[in-house]
Image 1 (cartoon, rainbow, N blue to C red):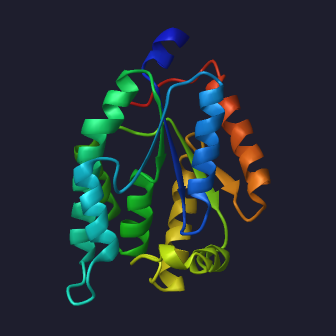
Image 2 (cartoon, rainbow, N blue to C red):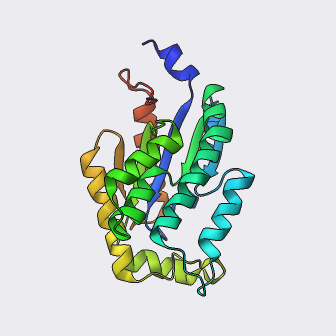
Length: 224
């Protein structure tokens, strides 16, 4: 497959990590970097990205304690949002040759709803494939740091607390272990970045990884 054909499809890059890992900061840097390199870039997030998916996000993050969202309902809502997101935003952008940068995607579902909530991983993978039509990120950057540091960062940002931030540290440790397990299973796609450093150092490593990955002659799209 030639380079021209590869790039015509666009690139799908996701950023993952526990709460407070700095994904929003780094995704903005990456968008600026790629835009300056002459690429068309779309920043988006999960759950969210479209009007319907953002409405589902609001339900997930602000659900009343009087009616707790069950793990099964949480997963189904996430898949519904992802289906809308992929169909109406991500795939059309990729087809236009755009670099899509997404704050969370399928790996978050496996880490949060699978490893932390205890839902069956195979069921989650099957449902995710149905919701996405088999779309897989070309490259995933996992921003890793200790749970205590991540939650301390989130608590310092008082206006941004949500339902997931209020989960126990034990829950978030399971999420982190889940992410690291996934990264160990797919080291070619998932690159672990130490996020327990100044933002500039993290930014420099991400720049090196992404630019190096984009210039690899063997790179090919991951659309099944």
